[in-house]
Image (cartoon, rainbow, N blue to C red):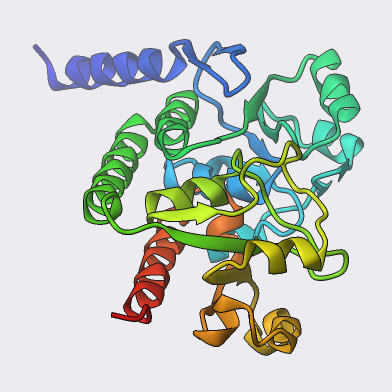
Length: 292
């Protein structure tokens, strides 16, 4: 067969594969179908941006939400506004063939408007480690970067298994996770942070509260007397100094006041494992301080 004909056949088969329909189910259970892999993608949350880059779709991002600052390449992509206040006109102007939204973080009315305009919206709301790995695969399918997404998911699951095997039998550690000082706020057991705490053998002292991010009182923390107080932030002194006023608090007595980069735990993306690995080491530090 002439070389020119072979080349034409290969090019044609590649184009057909590129144009083949792709489908996946989003985290809200909606079936998402595209006539061809997405070429113009918009992310509406920082965790989504990280997932898309890890899934091999970073080069196809034409818009991201504010605070999409990782990986560094994300900073160069046009902003379409904050998670709760999107610039709908800007999004439409960018002509996306896929928008990946944050179900509980974006405005429901704005997402409904995007769908009414005929824009395909994928709802991203990973609530556990398995959903993060699956997100890498599903988003890669929609972007036509299956090999990259599959490899990222395999690596994520392997690291998760190592952590689970290492820490699942460790002695329980009562933990208070502080997300805000004024008003004092925490997260309940349905949060990804609480999932990470459990994996490391910790026990979120406010896991049973019904609200995802409840406001609590200082007295409630003192009564629960956690062995560890954990927060996300860059300055431990500023974030946790208030608790040093209570020397009877077990976490203060043993100097178990720990800080983890908030983005590592608050964003349901691949870096959650980095935050979890550090969290597990911190809880081990607390265990070693126990009286023998």
